[in-house]
Length: 437
Image (cartoon, rainbow, N blue to C red; front, side, top):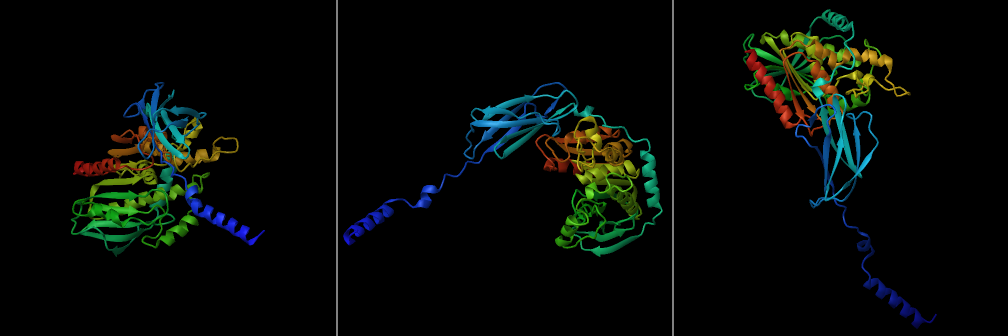
């Protein structure tokens, strides 16, 4: 090839390179549209009679608020239990409908999906007719009477270390109280200059996980709250440590606490947790400022589990606030329905509940504690799309309460206390205090 010919070729290549758009610009695709999926029942309260048809409307919009065309995969189940085969519906101008029904008291749960985008909707079917899955064990009361007697044999010894409260006018303390096994460990708040026998008491209990007690709860002891407050962590561990301390426990010693000892009622982890409730109430009712009559137990999720347990175990409890409670209807799977966290009863290789764990779980079931509650009142919250503490399980426990009670239902909420639910519980606690005065 001549030098002249080579120069012509290189010039042509250079011209092509200049005239072509950059390769990167050619390969950049338009950003994918974000799809928003919403599912609602055709009744505002999403409550139906057994056998009635519920119609769910599915709405899909992109980030330009345009209706999405395409297919939605829908799975209907009994509150997450026994899912039906998937159904596909076609969106027209961003909307589609699907129907379902339930022929027994409980909940339908619809899961609608477009790719990785998912939305849930629930429908309750005569939820106030849900019954306990199994009866209270014949020796339930004797078992817990024996546990409380063993606790009573341990003297109540308290160590109080002053700490600074974020609330004004409050004396606060990091408290350790002797108990069977691990101590009660929490933050105690007392209004300054409180008079003897003048104040109601409130015990705050925690959801799942491993953390310190909450010093912020001493706000309930300020001038507006006017209570003796005691916020205890769930595990009898030290308070106020660095995050690394609790992370190490959560990844080590307490990693699987929820299933520890689940095949033996004497070894079940929640036995110690519940006895710490009784001992915490021992501490509160020994305070000279306690009014001698008012004890509220307040918590959500695992805290709701503890609140219901406290009501069933201790006659000194006068009111409970149980938000989206765990620990409800452990034995639901024995009658072909879902059970709540912590799923104490596991499934064997044949898909059946482990019979040993099933029997042990009955002694730690909120359904059974609720049936023993003698307090003056209770409020409970529930989310219709809660997949952690399913509404089927929550209503089974709520219905077992024979005392004055009220339920706050959040149709579109999962495992959370919405602002409305939190307000419902707080107002109920203060109302109870006023009534007791």
